[in-house]
Amino acid sequence: MTVIDYHGLAREIKHWAAELGFQQLGIADTHLGAAEQQLDNWLAAGCHGDMGFMAKHGRKRSRPELLVPGTLRVLSVRMNYLPPGDDPLAVLNDPKLGYISRYALGRDYHRLMRNRLQKLAVRIRERIGEYSFRAFVDSAPVLEKPLGSSAGLGWQGKHTNLLSRDAGCWFFLGELYTDLPLPVDKPADDHCGRCTACLDSCPTRAITAPYRLDARRCISYLTIEFSGSIPVSLRPLMGNRIYGCDDCLLACPWNRFALPTAELAFHPRNGLESPPLDALIAWSDDQFRRRLEGSPIRRIGIQRWRRNIAVALGNAVTTPEVIKALERATADPSSLVAEHAKWALDCHRQQPSR
Image (cartoon, rainbow, N blue to C red; front, side, top):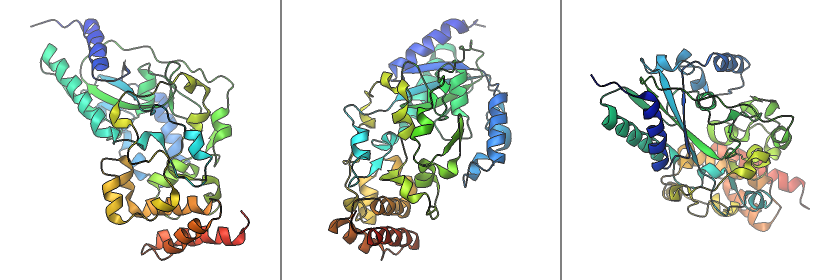
């Protein structure tokens, strides 16, 4: 029986990961006791809102060996996604345009990263023979940020996102669960210090304390995960953000070290980096499907898409084009869209001088 040099294998795996386009790979064990307690507290406080899936899998989320029996190590990878030459602040500061979280400007990352992880797993098998593995990219109950921190990819910043001294936080995460007893990497230290830039920048004050996010106030949750009527008190705070929110990332000083992605799949498509709001809300069902084919945005469906755009139009400068777009939207067959469009129209009628 061949004896495996696991330290040597770990070095090879990191080299192969780089060849496959990952910017970093780290190795973690399965011990997530502190993260499990934080998750329990967060769920008990109801901070997950309507995301029932965060609680329904029991301990499988925080105990990898329950999700995939036999798991000993987690290979955690990151892949940069910030588009080159992008100017997010210019879009945020132009109320005629819709702001889309930069992770969603290109093709859906889930399949691309999962395919790369599968290729990595196959290369390992070719080297050592059969072993057990499963690849995940936001596709199962996985505590990806605590695992990434444990694997040395970064630390969870005060905004709760994973943050690297070398790369900021504009990156995706993926995991390969395996039964290989590989040497683990040193967990990352916290380097947020006394900085509160992310807390201060959050439009809805969803970061209620350092390292604590209340999803019920988070624009990313409201525009992507939440399917109902957005609380009226939060609508004016959403500005022109129609899919996700990057404000806490844009404010983070560590992102001065972030590098743009070389992955062409993540480059903007269909003008989504700076789209005019009045044109977006007029998309037909067919246009929505065709223009967003292969995009992560497509999964929210056209009703939530139009709902979000209606709110942004309510926060826009009053123009004939904005009024006309909203008047059409008040007749939308979806009561959800029509209600938000009527609210937006009322905002302009109450403040005609904006």
